[in-house]
Image 1: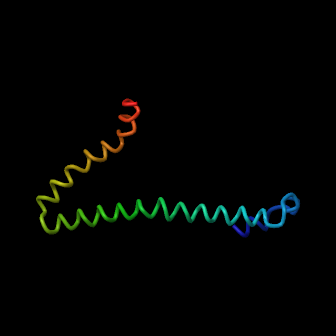
Image 2: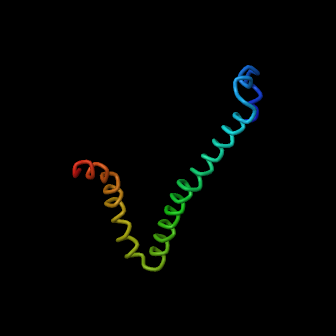
Image 3: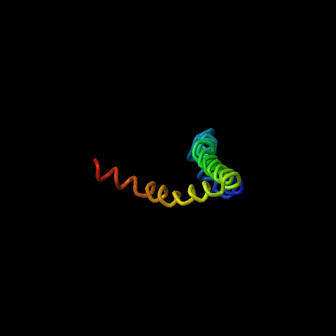
Length: 90
């Protein structure tokens, strides 16, 4: 990102006030950090919890684990179709 800033023509810097470009850069970095912390991290946490929970069930009671795995396509199909069902209901 720093290399890209050095490639920008000097006239671009003259258009903005002193701290304007710096503020824009830091705001963008803050938005990326916010997205990582509040959206990506919870999704990864849920996926890991499901994976380890399923592995735990498969290790300690494999028939129950297989039964649980049979329900996964049903739930994923329901999650995919949920927005359509809500649109039809409203």
